[in-house]
Every structure is written in structure tokens, then in C-alpha cells.
Image (cartoon, rainbow, N blue to C red; front, side):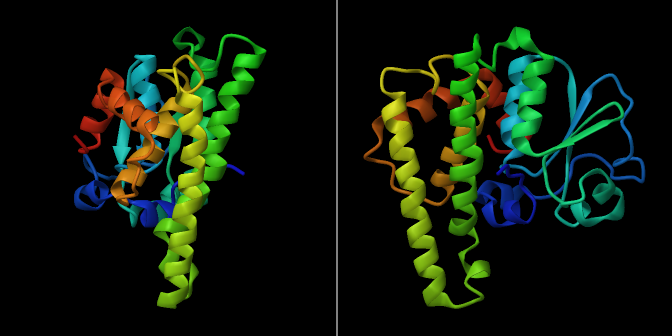
Length: 242
């Protein structure tokens, strides 16, 4: 299962995202139409899962454009014509429109093999996909319950607390697996890959929810290292998160 940030992104917004929600530039009827510029264009909410794509675009180092959206704009007919789920991210490359984070990330890596973000051989690519899938299908999915417990409980406060507590524990269990993988490594697969960009976003969400990661020193070391990465810093700054 692959996840994008739409309704879920509203639930999963970081405090910084909530404070900075809005749009950059002027929204016109042409904003959501086919994009025939020389650069790719990424539609996003600040701090949501498109941050992973934003980081990867920085790592690739080629020109691109972004369009920051409000949640209301993702429900407009013009945007729904691009992305029927009313979610982000959406990547527009000429007349090609792509949705879903994992698909977008792999498209960018395949289009830019010189960036070496997929793994150097068949086992390396499989390893990258293993950790990308954990971020996309396990950690991201479970965060939906962490942030959306009120919604999924139908407004029952007691049920909501159980959902959030159990989902938080499940997220922590995934991070414990990642903790073991990171021992002796600067990158989750041993070399920089798409999975690192996605994992950074997942750790940032845990931080926003004030999850206790004090017993995961490798994860905290890894997050600190990534925060010093120039591509990560540039993406965070562009989204108003740094």
C-alpha cells in the first residue's frame, strides 16, 4: 500500500506546518493546468510527506518549481483533475502527472541515475525499496492513527486515547527496527537513498508529536546528521520549516 498526504496530511500536520499553512505565489486558473515549463513542479503542504520529494529534488540538484497549497485548494476541481484524491504530493513533468510519494520518488531517481538514490545493483535497489516501503506502508500508515485518533474513534475520547497510545507504540516499534539497522551506518541502507528522505520526515513527525526517542540514540544521531545536510536544510527553509 502506498500513501500520499491528503486528508491524512491534515491530521499529520506538524506544528510548524499548521503555523505556516497557506500558499506561495498567486493561485490562478492556470496554477493546476498542464505544466510545460522547463522544470518539474511539485505541489505540497509544508511539513507533510511531500517534504521527502522536496529533499530528493534538492539532492538531484536540477531546477524545479514548487507550489504550496492550502487544503481548500486541493479540493478545487482544477486540482482534483490532477490528483483525484485531493492529496499531496503531486508532481507535474510536462504533460505527465504523477501522484503517490513512493512512485514520485522512484520516478525522480530513475530519471536521474547519476544521483545514485536507488542502490547500485539489484540487491541494493531491493534493500532501498525495503526501507522505503517501511516508511511508506508501515510508519506513515500508522501515523494516520496517531494524528487521526479523534476522527477514527468517531469522537469517543476514550477510544481515541487507546487508538493513539497503541499507534504510538507501534510507530515506536518500527523505529526500534530502524535503530538496529542504523548502527554503524550514516544512511539507512549504507548509502544515501530515497529511503533516507522519507525516514527523515517520519522522524520529524515523531518529534512534532513529542514521542520519546531518548532510548534510540542511533535514530537521534541520524536525525541530527540529516538536519545538517544541505539538501535537507534547503527543503526545510523553502517550506518555512527552518
